[in-house]
Length: 338
Image (cartoon, rainbow, N blue to C red; front, side):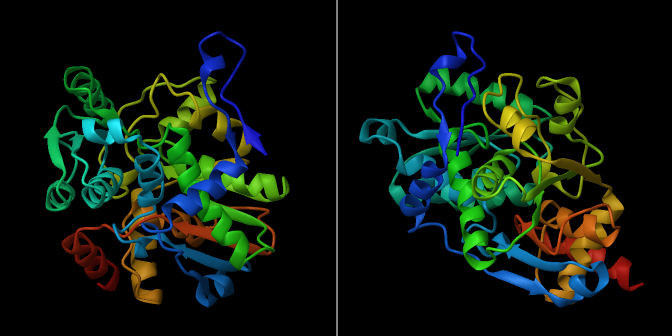
């Protein structure tokens, strides 16, 4: 199976197609950075939902999230000349952390642009990994504008967080791993923000069987992808604070890949509230002793409040990351126990 961003106009004809082969190549290329994560059967969620629920624990990756897959695939695809120029990313946290980590391992300079809304602990984590953090604006879209400015001024190579074929293929390797461990999978719940994770996994799954149901789970307070799907083209919406801060940020008005891929490959998009996200985070910790950030808990949150339907028997839930401030998790646990 392949996916092309081309819609017939002159500009889009230059955009490369993304094939299932690219996902397998990404897996081979990234093997030294991204580990195969466990697919944990949740007997508790299975008993309460009626599905056989399996949790794909990307929170156990070296950098605490799935983002290391796409970042590694992109950076390892760069030429020697491009590596010498250094790389540039804009991020709400996990992508920047992954880029900084992989770049440091490869001896590449990394600059990460973030908005002032990003929690301080995420900024400090990136700096600890060797990334040069530049704070600008009050949203990821504004941080992206700063990144474009630095790209022009310093000649750095842009590593987009989602709308890039190498990044999408890297995230799609999660789908291959799920198929290896659970070939009878019927459906997946996947966190949704810019769409790189959702698009990559959807490509792998739909190539295996179009009958596999792909459900994206986004934030009720802010989901630009859903708004764009409803509008029929990429749009901007207001960015608001959320427990799922790693899912904040726009999809880019110049989106070439993830918007059409989500539109064409994803069966459904559902949204969860802040209260539901908190319940999902607590459930993962209390039931499975897994530390999961808000963005990583949205699939569990959707299951706990029964926002899903017609998912078949075997359901995989992608737990995208675990980079949460321990104080926040402690506060949530205190409220839930009270």
